[in-house]
Image (cartoon, rainbow, N blue to C red; front, top):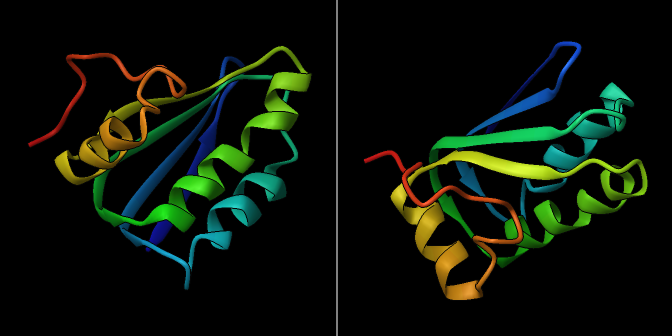
Length: 105
């Protein structure tokens, strides 16, 4: 898995790629914590994620509290089919504000 974070005055962007599973999911939290920025929304691009398991989903959910405490949200702005399927099955599309049209093939 690869994690790339960029930020500007309006948001923090987290681009993930590869497989997200129990072996590497904590890298996502570490990367976000390293920015120390919770006063802007976090946008997650998962276009290049080929697999995500329940530990990866749990890690994404665990990122929410510090943003919500600051009146911000975590939104998945782009996602691959495998990620979309997992979020559909778990009922989390709305939780992460996934637009119905925002899916990569």
